[in-house]
Image (cartoon, rainbow, N blue to C red):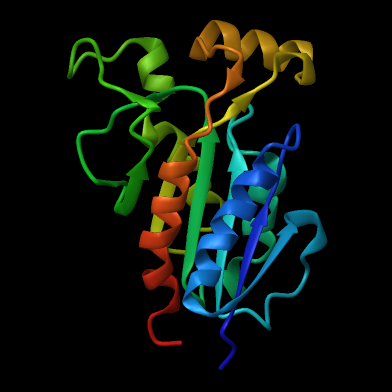
Length: 199
């Protein structure tokens, strides 16, 4: 059986590639081969024993990543899979599992709701369930071992006008690089054992 892992990602402005590389570096600590490739470059998963798929939230999880899940659903359902999401706003969930899936949250990213049980429009939009629901729906046969949510890198000058207005008005995201490398590395270390058990 192959012990090769794929970390594949979609990106809007390029910063997700650094997150994918950081995850791959941590996975390699288990003496496995890890490839890092954009989802657009991946058409065959037969050589991989586990897969990590990641992308930013840009008016929903990046469309290329969702398309990858749909196209590769059958293959992904046969191996351990983890997802990661980068975003600029997140409402702290009240559970370590959302929609039946274990989730890990960057502690620098999630904000508790101002009135638990009475979320504002912005808090509802930025909820883990709202972000995660369409991802799971894209490939319902795939049951990820964990989904990591991390703060991203917001460069408004790289967004189109609609994306910029949406991010500023609905999520209230500030521009800047908020990637928490410690949280990303810790998640990769934790998820590594889930991906390679039995290999």
